[in-house]
Image: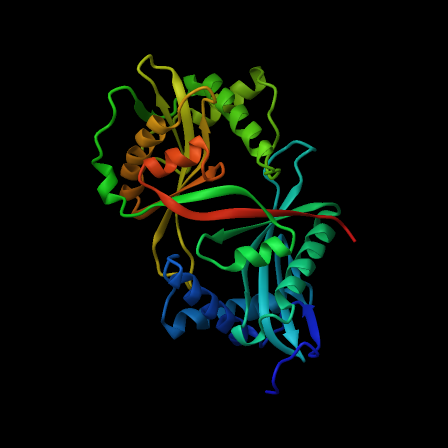
Length: 349
């Protein structure tokens, strides 16, 4: 094709049937560079990308030229009619409060190396935001998780995105399973009787999220009998290694509940290699306590459960900024900086 330049015609639209193989090629380019940054490995088998191509073509036929298919958004950017960039988004709402906006998660944003610097990435993000606000008929919050070694941090910053949450990762979970517990802490699965204490920790977590500018979730709620009852019902019948998510807590020497988290273990979809990903999310810690001993207790306990489900690594999400006590506690538990979540509010045109 002709050499690409800033005078080339850029357009953003829904993918069309027959473009699946081209878009799968963009995915392969994305996963290969992500793997070089330490992310989960992608398949090297052509058959994996043939499956992706078939799925994209099937979805494109179902879309009928629309970027929306339910809550799934898919857009391609073309230069002179040739698809050289793509982005997917998933729209969801993480709460019940009318103050909680809809969120559009940016997924698999990639521009072919030979077309970078020509505005395709920014055009894709802007169009994704427009599609999300159209779908929800109001403002939306666009969020993207960016690996720490990824140079896209600069790109997102220039596009108006700000970090609102951080993630650390524990590698080689097998090494952490046998870590001896501190005698002053006791990790365990949450019980229905923990509902009131969990409600207090949830309120602390909600306040921390808001202070960091993370508005994806509900603000702090009033703690009343309805909330306590709902939490207790959700925890009723919980047991170790049971259905995901597992709600985990840590108590201190006086049996006071000081920290809580939710553990998820789920397989990654192709074209990732078939591995299981474990995530500790909703990390709530007593604001008056040093979080270090409690995360040091949670990580080996979560590692034990996660390894029984086949996971080999563990991500700790919902962390505050580097240098804060919670972030330092995650690193002290054996994790390393992994990624950050960046966010931007998108208003209807």
